[in-house]
Structures are given as C-alpha cells and as structure tokens.
Image (tube, rainbow, N blue to C red; front, side, top):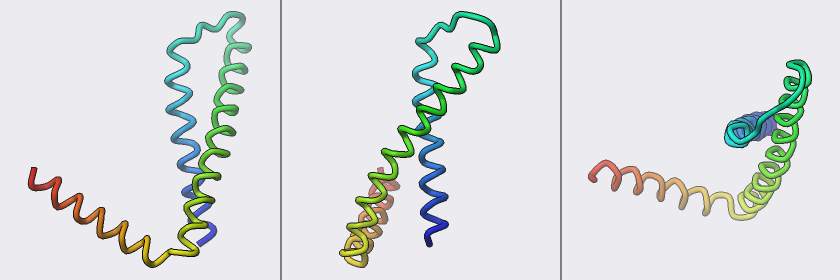
Length: 92
C-alpha cells in the first residue's frame, strides 16, 4: 500500500512539474551559452518538481488522514458519486 501511495505521489508530482515548467518556459528567454541554458533549464524543472512534490504530499497527507478515519464511508460515497456522474455524462 505504501509503495502504491509513493508511486502515485511521484507520478502526480512529475506530471504537475512538467505542466508548470511547460507553461513557464513559454515566457522565458534564456541568454548565455547552450550549456548554461541547459543547466538553468534543468534546475528550474527540479525546483518545479520539489514544489509540486511538497504540494502533492500535503494534499495526499490530508486525504489519507481523512480516509483513515472515515475511509469506508467516504470511499463508498466517492465511488457512488463517480458512477452517477459517469451515467449522467453518458446520457448527455
């Protein structure tokens, strides 16, 4: 279970970091030699990854804390909500 949570945490962090990085890179003009641009670009992506990993860890920590206390009830309500949403979405 902890491995699954870790994989989800890492995957979400990487996805969010890539999205933030791509959005920010459109507006950045880098000057200098190609190796300097590459190093600073990689460093920017690492910083985005660190920030997104912290944010995802906080959100997952809160969610897992809630699920440990109210796990079965909230899980069933969420599953029922998703099923109802999918059924309503198919009709429209």
